[in-house]
Amino acid sequence: MATPEGESESGWDRIYVDGEWRPASSGEVIPVENPATREQFAAVPAATEADVDAAYEAAAAAQPAWARLPREERLEYVEAARDALKSRFDEVVDLLAQEGGSAHGKGGGEVAISLSDFRTALTQEPPEPEERESVFVEGKTNHVVHEPVGVVGIISPWNYPLHLSTRAFAPALALGNTVVLKPATATPVTGGLLLAEIADEVGFPDGVVNVVTGRGSEIGDRMAGHPIPRVLSFTGSTDVGRRVASEAGSAVTLPALELGGNAPNVVTDDVDVERVARIGAVGSFTHQGQVCISINRHVVHEDVYDEYVDELVANAESLELGDPSANSDVDLGPVIDESQRDDLLTYVEESVEAGATLETGGSARDLFVEPTVLSGATNEMAAACNEHFGPVAPVIPVRSDEEAIEVANDTEYGLSAAVQCDDLERARTLADRIDAGMVHVNDHPIQDEPNAPFGGTKQSGLGRYNGEWIVEELLETKWISLQHEDRDYDLV
Image 1 (cartoon, rainbow, N blue to C red):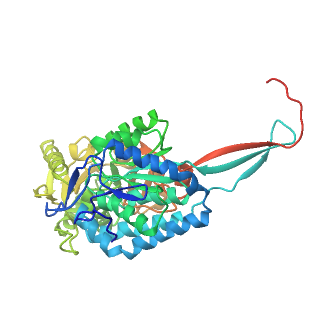
Image 2 (cartoon, rainbow, N blue to C red):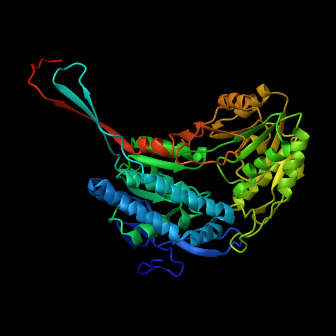
């Protein structure tokens, strides 16, 4: 690991602006705790709005020269960054466990998909320029070209901090944009400073990559509402996303938003219950349920309901909780903080008070929340109508496909969903009727593919990530007309 001059023993006490490691202008730091042990393992800078300004100004100054570089030269930097991340694979998995409570399976998967973000970025390029004859004027051609938007701001969350940074970071750089990244306060290392360190090691030109750490309450509005960026990538809750979109809109910045979800998992009456309950458990409990696309509600046909609940309980009770930074074999780690834990336990308590049956779980030891299954749930109960973001599985009985669709769509969110059904024609009909940006048949909804559009409908966001969809977000379309022949000009 590179050790910038003046860095603290923790190795992460500087922001990265204009190719330099520097303290925050506040002179203050924010402690970062391992949520499993509650012990501090790092202290990161508490950046100010002045630091955000400096980062955006550096990015703006560096962008024209970065965009003018031949694409092949830019990609050499991006490829080198990918190789540097790959060489630190095991170290980063350990960091994800230590900083965010990620079990090793989840951590390894996250590093792998982040590497895929870089690998995919190497293949992403602007559409070929087009030449079109003028519809109205003889001897005139219209040329359509695509240019980098300029500066891209990224605000990433704590649950998948590395991947949800790199999915915008890597393509933005490959396409000729410069970047200012603000990671989540809870995961500033894996969400940002690690990438700054890699950029510094690779030797990106000064100002191309900038990372500022700090509290969202202090610098979030400035990140989102700054006049310099042309695109602002934000992943987080819908409530915060609305504010980010408002701030970005005031600066005429395009907000690319992936927001909250409340994914239904529709289970029909023709399935192998043991198999689909295993799918449901993976979809509900992966990373302690702290995934925007995890299963939030199990919508199960009454003919298989009891068996499904029993199998889901068996899967939940087979999972081992523990400190993933100390034991690589545990299935689940801690939730991120006390607020998250308290909200989860409140949702469970309120749902039981409303008539749900607690089949298993429902309690916590420090930040370790037990995998929880609630039967007899309804869509109106707290654990079902809220994006609970934890290892809680409310199971809602339904009598028909029509009722299942009604329940599935009865939410303000539309991010992801799943359908478990052996009849693929019936399954596809159900998938088409679910109002979500992504629906997965005979699989859980925790899916992300580099060649598939990732994003939601309704209050779950704007825009799409991955493939050609993120390329469209990160490029401006420009029209250049050429008049080849003399012509008469009249007032129009």
